[in-house]
Image 1 (tube, rainbow, N blue to C red):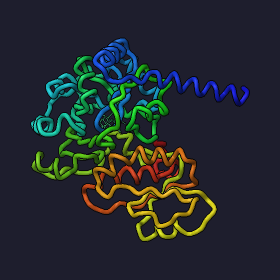
Image 2: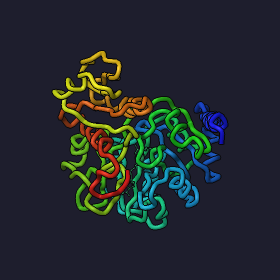
Image 3: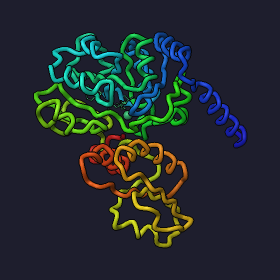
Image 4: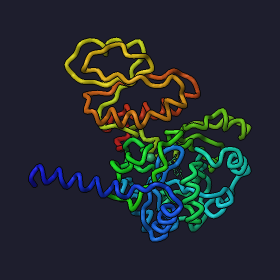
Length: 348
Ligand code: TXA
Ligand code: MG
């Protein structure tokens, strides 16, 4: 194909994908619910990141999520619910702790892993005997869930292993061709994926850190939750390489930033907490907020922008220690792990 024809085709594709972005009016939400009922895919805003939603009870719809994302079939999906009572439709032997946490943190950025009720699709649970449930806080997600009336299975609306989308436009560039509609709920206010707490085992464990920290969970649970997978459940966000930009990303200590200000040929990006140490043209210096919540809110969108600028490398100043930075550290470490340098050989 001629290069200009390719360009035209690309721009037509992007235009048709953008046409699927709907402002979340009541009629757009009804339209999206009808798409879900018909087995289609709807990208929906949540307070954490945008999700790629489908009817959790339709195997063909759920299969379409895996196909669109290029996600391996053994990676389970979170089912989003309109109310905590609906937990009993999907989970069995629900511990009192789950109800307590639901009362305290739902709607909000917390996913609970519970024992799967027989009848819940193995496709959704990645073949496991557990199921992930969450009530998102974003008003558009809530309206859609209420209008649809059942659980919506939704992973983050990005291609497998890539940075999660925190704006409708990110979904267009990740999966625009594959979704039937995208509800635009504005920028996500949390910006990082939900905290995942496994309550299916003998002790509670945090499988993925998020905005709701271990301390807040411990206050409700009465015990400090353990950390990391107990072995059985697979969390794709816990693969060594995940949330990765295409540009190599390196984490650097604050004291080493000055070296990046030295003259060099390559164009590079620096995502720092410190103000710019250089005005050199080859260095794109981005100063990030010093407060953890605000940093988290902006992180994925900023990484995406830097990734698109075509630098040889993105250097990220390692944020300070401290529990409030846990989730940010987690995502940065995964983004810095390049596919191929992983121990497991699995791709994120
Ligand atoms: O904030 C979020 O959680 C977003 C929004 C859209 O809700 N969703 C999200 O989904 O991040 P996803 O699929 O990208 O990541 C969910 C993680 C996956 O890593 C998956 O393996 C894990 O949750 N998960 C789901 N069900 C599970 C289960 N039964 N056991 C262990 N991990 C589970
Ligand atoms: Mg994801």
